[in-house]
Length: 345
Length: 147
Ligand code: FES
Image (tube, rainbow over all chains, first blue to last red; front, side, top):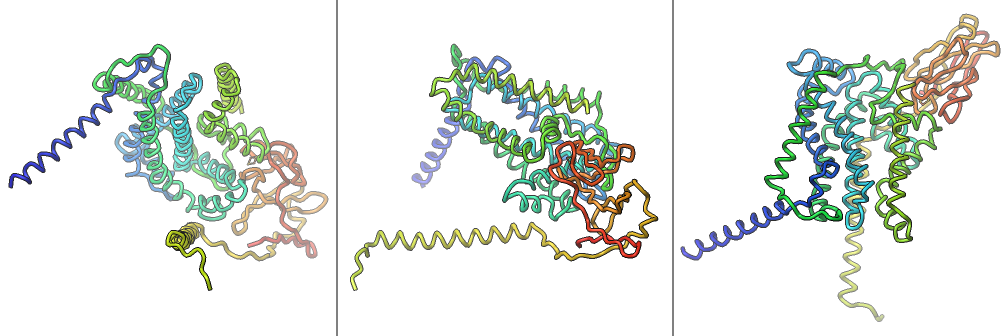
């Protein structure tokens, strides 16, 4: 049947052309400024997310999300399982570094105002990625179920419960009851291992896609230079290997530890959360509850919609470059001071 | 009876609108049921007096912690009488404990401080500690718990 034959041929040609298009698309040359490291900070969290998924999957084989067993199972992973301490350590340091580099990435974008039209959605999707990552951090350290986790769970769920209207239902939804209970741990486990990772991967995918579709920000004097493959891909590979080496070293020097198990009768003497929460932690320690809550929420909202604010103000002739530099410096300064205060308490 | 606007476009629009609304309503209800599935039902509350003991047997100016049902309490006897407080900090729900030397209730989470009467005097807590009603019947102290 000659006609059928030519049909498949046509499809094949079409497929070829399609894949050619995709290759050409991915191969689109990258602008020169991507050679300078501050412009590559987004790829590092992406790599770390990969590490987190792999080690996280491994950890789920031993972790038991029940209040009676959770702490024990983490202890088992850390002390008995072959290389368990190592896998847990890589998971832990990956999230620390992921958040650190996300922050660097945000700071770079903020200072260079790379979110300007048409890049608003790059910023918005990225900002949400940051918040979901924080949620992953919170649910993750709750799972350890040591005393700091337990009271952290109580404090954070209570804070969400203080929101108007949605607060009480949300509190019940998260806790699965009036109090932090067996249900709560299971729910946070489900969030940490199912809902949030899927959300995070979709959002990160969306963010990368938006960046690819909209293109990289224009930087004066930056021309098209190297192709995505092999030059840039190799570079990213090198970064990934470098990160892996760094993390392996960190894990060996600072192997993961465990606090005392959750005590439902007594709050831990020092309930300081991991470093990436110490700034909000100090805010809720220093300000009365509602003020702190609204301050944090308002700050988060401002952060997400910042490109639109910038656009509006720039239209009115405000010197946004200078303003961003000032705001950035003040924000970083405040973060550092709050973290320092936390270590002093 | 004259029907003035009986054109097909308008009829289609109306039927689609009604259908769309109905579907949306149905979906909303379905969604709500699923949320209800996730939120366990609460139990009804009633007051139960629980005997704490003879007033004189409680230590003076020293709060004792106890757990009755799922209530965590601090019972403090002063010269004014016996008071029972909830241990739950009114800020974000950590457990407060009694500092004997300072005669204050201290919350370790964000350094909330309450005085002997349970009034919030420092730190983030927005209101005094919750109190349980204490009844004294001929020297026997009861506390009223809502369970
Ligand atoms: S929970 Fe007690 S001071 Fe915040």
